[in-house]
Image: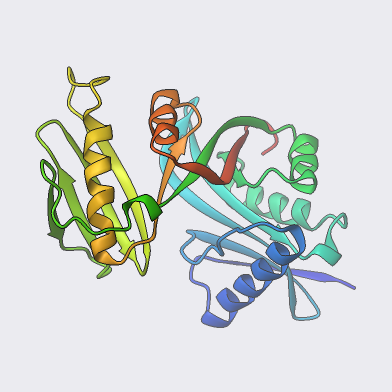
Length: 252
């Protein structure tokens, strides 16, 4: 049966729902946890008999790699449609759409089927981003406002509950979603690093989070950042998910 490729930068809700359904189907089959791309800059949708069998979603990163624009790619094919050339059809269509000028960066879970495809393309591993999780059981007794750490609620465009946390030498931000807290932007002033400033800030923050009914803390860190990974492991964080990035330069 023939396939049809739809290219759009403004997908309809029914198209996005088909992408979500395909993503859920593949996650269940592969045991992965990919998020459906709801906000990509460009979608390439491959249909057979009006059924979405594969998609490629592209994000312009506003960065360059060796002088060429860098585009991040999320792609997925229905398990029963794999090894039938679906991804190649979409990649070729994307190459024509962008005139082959972009360097592609694929964000993937390292499962065998994905690695085989990337190897066949000649993509090279760049780095991994690790999602790390810390249960707050040892901080279960709420302690109120941290002693040397100030917590200030901030305004956000999407209405999320977010706080700016800071001490004299360190800072971070935390977003709350139900009983989960997501930490990002951990910084320590130059000249004050390796003096446990960030560790002290985070330990005090963890003592305050149970007051907000949080039971788990999550954060993301690059596997290139050995110092940060060492700190987070010392605090008790463990890796809950790994997303690896592969670069493809020559093919398109």
